[in-house]
Length: 537
Image 1 (cartoon, rainbow, N blue to C red):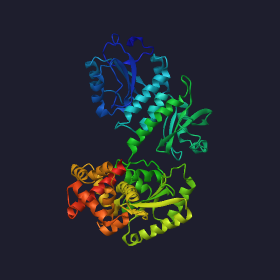
Image 2: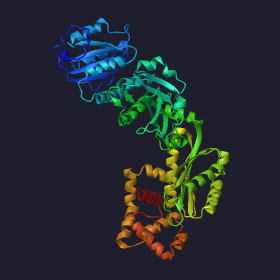
Image 3: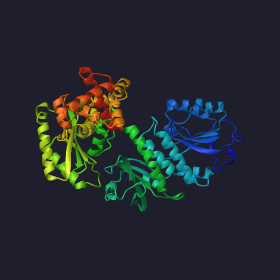
Image 4: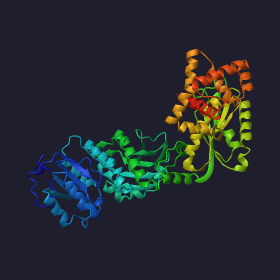
């Protein structure tokens, strides 16, 4: 299309001949960064008040370098306009330059734009322009609550109001002059109009409806995690575009939320629940120290304090299988959690599938009594819930909140290794007692340890498989009883000479004498590596 075919005559402010220029599409820009959708032969509208004066030369130069067909400056302050150097810049690049003066609100201006745009679905055009600007704004340094709300109001062509979670008005974008004259943005009836709003009747695809001055408004939730940060209220009907496109608003709300969080992450508390906070701590979901410090302070917790984690795991008494939510009623999990909270009033608790996680303050004086106290705890739970088995994994101590993710991993590791390879009568597994397992687990891919395993236990297991012997069981039992021959053959219910013959076979297979302390160490390490490989497989 040619520029001289515009239905509304724009004010031309440079000497470039626009009659020979063609444009393929319109583009609207609110800021100077990440304008990825601007392409050759675009007619670009720029909202001048959002472009900082000290950056305008750089911005318009980069815009001209994109080979745009023309540029129109939208401004509402007659004292803030392009200086002569910028006008000359457009002449240098042979880009026609126009202007539109927008008074007070966007209503009159958007009527003009409505006549200029040739797209058949003009509402869809504005929606796409809005989405482009929001996506670009997500990583922009210019972002502010004012710009966000004004952009939405501009492109949606409606009154928009940003409210806090407590329904206090944060910012507004007035589209119609009558709303401005009525001073609606100072209206004290917001809380009354939205008094019945809740999580059930206010959702992105089913917003809460209410009326102001006989005009219908829709209220959308602004969500972060599973909590509501605030609300976005938009007038539903428009004299040109009809009713609001609710699915579109639901689609762009996440972009709006990300923009808010990216800018205000140092000031904005997400109002997570304590459960969500503990999950973020234990699962290592925090990426910035400032965020975890801020949220720790929000829950009135000490950031630097020695703590450890212990996990109470609940198993089926018959087959020791992990209990899932369908097998164990949530009421039982909650009852057990309440019991734990009564026993350990200073602890923080998190329920998971089939287990309860406890964050415990480390106190050497009181912690000496912890094994006895936990044994009593297990005894009482077993008495109350005989259909379940209870075991506990305990981590090392850590000095601050961010390191609790390692404490959680320690406790999980203690449960896995302890339950599998510690004596059956043990119900409490301390990480410190399984330290060698964790060391080997971290070094499991070390070629030296792999060679050690292949030259000892791996050969013994291969021999057993081929000859149907019980040498692996024999070496396991020997190590369990610290190479005490009498205890070993008694436990295996074999004659001592049978044990001696088995030891000779093992020595022949590995090519080492078991009278050597180093050989015994190799075999002990090999057995523990085998335990780890078995669990990993």
